[in-house]
Amino acid sequence: MASDELFDEIREMPNADADREFKKLVGLDRLKDILLKEASLILVPELLEQWSSKKHGIVLPCVEQFHNRPPVMVFSGDVGTGKTTLADSLGSPIAREEDIKVTHIRLSLTTRGEGAVGQMTSLISRAFDEVVKLAKRGTKSDGKPTSAVVFVIDEADALVESRDTEQMHHEDRAGVDAMISGIDRITREHLPVLVILCTNRSRALDPAVLRRAAIHHEFMRPDAEQREALFRRAFDRVFDDEQYRELSRRTGSNASGRNYGHSFSDITQRLIPNILLDAFPNRPVSFDLALSILDRTEPTRPFGPTDGEQKS
Image (cartoon, helix red, strand yellow):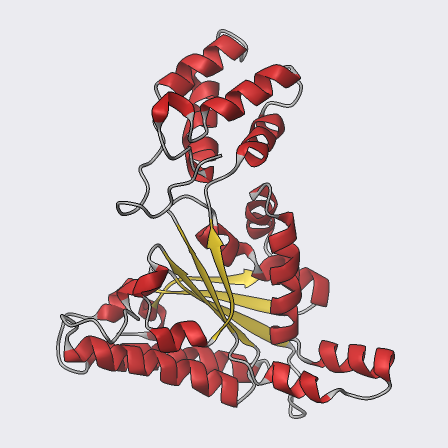
């Protein structure tokens, strides 16, 4: 398998498309601020030394402890909640803010291989080898990075399921070991790499992988305020305040007796486009039209029997 076949996507950032994806994630401003700060300190570690020297006159011992943490984030949550979009776009604002090139890489699920002994382990190891090679090319002789890598592993539970699972095949266990080895190598060599694991089933992830996560954020379906913000942004000044609130209410978990509401992607990729298509080309968007489309657009069911259920 060639190196480019190890990855589903390779993008150089800053990237205008990624900027738009990042801005579209409404209602996650506090989370985005925290993640940008954390990611910037992982990818550009001298920022923390500079801050410590400026504010304390020395580099505090805890700064080194901070840098010894594995550069791993886990994004978990139900389908359509924005975790993968955030993972795929996070590198662009970092690249702009720190004025460095960030290479975004997404691991291909073909790394699971075809079940041959040693195949998955070999492929995961090769993927990390490629990431390490790329990161080292962007590191100067003094260790300071001129570029960085964001390495996204979507559906991570397919690759790093807990080794405690009774039905787990030996080859899958070896694959988890290879993933942990790759993460530890990046940590040990202090490379400018951020590893982001996305999953619908965080409880299925191997505990050793979860322990290495600097951040584990669980993404929920949008609450009432976030849903209203999505409609206000999409249909600016089309509806009045009460109508925006009603659209938010009807896409929530209490609507029609459901115990789950519409996800971010249900609203932004299905409901809002369907409203536009129904109005175009002969009539304007109206509240009655929006309600009629909403009544025909069921939210995606949560992943699993309980995961993703949320009342608001």
